[in-house]
Image (spheres, protein in one colour):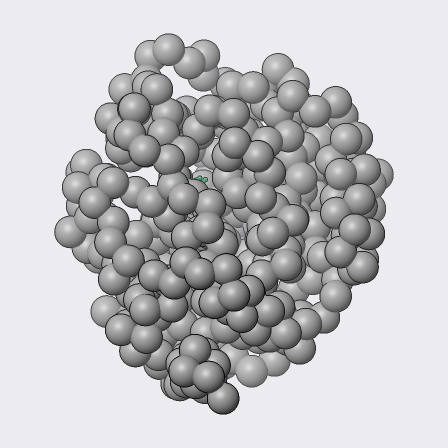
Length: 358
Ligand code: 5AD
Ligand code: FES
C-alpha cells in the first residue's frame, strides 16, 4: 500500500480524522495523487449512495436580505439589484412545474428576508403537502425556534443552513453582526426538531487556509449532517469581496472528495457554484463524491435577480433545459436519475439528538 493509500484509509476509518491528514491530502496537486483521492471517493459514493443522482428543484422565492455577508450579491447594501418576493401563486406554479418533471424534492430558498412571515410560509408548506407527493427543504436562514417548529409541524422535511466556514474568526469577519454560536444554536434546534439538516462551506474565501478547510470537513463529520453543499467562492461586484480571487475548482473538488470519504453516507450536491466557474465542473463533482444535482425552477424574471454571485449556471438556459442537462450528465457517467425523494441516508441510524460540535 502506498503512503497516500495509507492516509486515505486512515481518514476513511477514523471516528474523527486528523486535521493534519486532511490538510496534507488537500495540498496534493500531482495528477496521479488527485486521481487516487477521487477514485477512492467515487467508491465510497457508490457503496453508500449507489449510482442514482438525486434531484432537488430549487425555487428562489425572495431576494430580500437583511444580512451583509461579505461574499454575497444579495447583501442588503447592494442597491444595484431589484428586489422581489414571489407571490404564493407564483411559487405554487413553480412547484407544479417541478412536479411535472417528476422531481420529488423542492428547495424553497430566499435571502434572510426579515419580512418573511412564518405563517405565510406555513401555508405554502401545507399547500404543497396537500397537493403533491414531495419533500420540502427550507433554506431561509436563521429564524426563531418557534418558526422552525411551525414549519416542521406543517410538514417541512429538511433545512439547509450552511456554516460557510467553521473558522469562527473568519466567520465573524465575513458576517457582520452575526454570531457563530447563534448559527450553531440554530443547527442544534433544527436537528432537535427532526429536520434532515444540511451544512456546507465556500472554498477559496479570502483569508481561508487549507487547515481551515480541513477543519470544515471535521465539522461536517462531527455534525453528522444529512447533506453537505460545497462550492467555490465567486466574487460578486456589489459585495465587499468584489474583485478578489475566485475559488480554485480543483481545491473545491478535493474538498468534495474528502467530505465524501470522511462523512460517507451524506447527500452531496454538485453545486451550482461548481457549475458556474470558467466552465461547468459539476460532472467532475459527480465523479469524485457528489450524488445530487439542483436544477433551478425559479421562474423568470426572478431567476436573473437572484444573483448571489455572477455567471450563475442555469440562469440563461431555457425552461426544460435543466432536465435534458441532468439526464445527459447521468448518462455520460453511466449512472441514472433517481426520481425518488431521496431522503437522508442516515435516518435509520439516528435518534433525534442535538449533538453538534462546539
Ligand atoms: N460565491 C459562492 N457561493 C456563494 N454563496 C453565497 N455567495 C456566494 C459567492 N459569492 C453560497 C453560500 C450560500 C448559498 C446560498 O450560496 O454558501 O449558503
Ligand atoms: Fe444574505 Fe448572504 S447576504 S445570505
